Length: 151
Image (cartoon, rainbow, N blue to C red; front, top):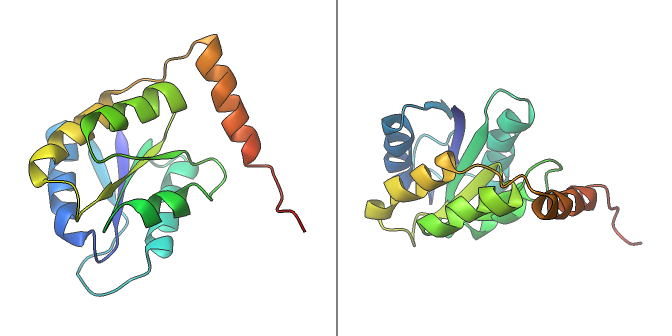
């Protein structure tokens, strides 16, 4: 599997642990930045990382920022991206199994380094529970992409 990885400056200190966890599972990392602790805007990193998934060049994306909140909000504004907040393994797995997530966001200030391998493994090993009920719910999520803002 190809995994797009992006982190802003707040997420950068955890980025290498995430990369190592992805690679230890035998997956390929597509690095979408940043490459230092110099300030960058998380919406820019999120967009660059998620666009790799939307183009088909990567299968999933992992976003790392300070709390994960900014990245998850930015990612879910991009039509076709379903991003879950994953600060522990169960949420990482459930986001894929029940919501067909193609991205997760992790908070570098909140997630202990020791949990990173488990979070990444659960996210990348999870498979969408392709039954009628979950398909129906994901179709409704996808329909939200087409909504236009009220005037």
